[in-house]
Length: 113
Image (tube, rainbow, N blue to C red):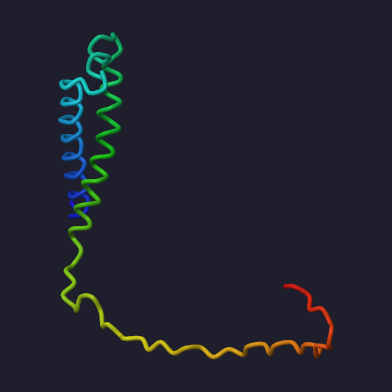
């Protein structure tokens, strides 16, 4: 059997085992009243089975993702990169020249701004 398939099947088995443990703890601790609802109802086993399946899918996917990420080769190269210092030079921009004003005549009223 290929190594990746074996890894996938093992991850699914671990994920569903964790799921069964988690659902058992949730029912035993009666989190949010779920334990009472599941044990008191005649069809509570369906809710428990759904929780087992959905948590199993979730936990096995996370388990498989963690295992795949751990398979990546170690980066033995330099860490952090080279710190290049950037020289900040002020940008020169052309400023518009002030508009010419009319010469003030004696007695003329200047408008307020």
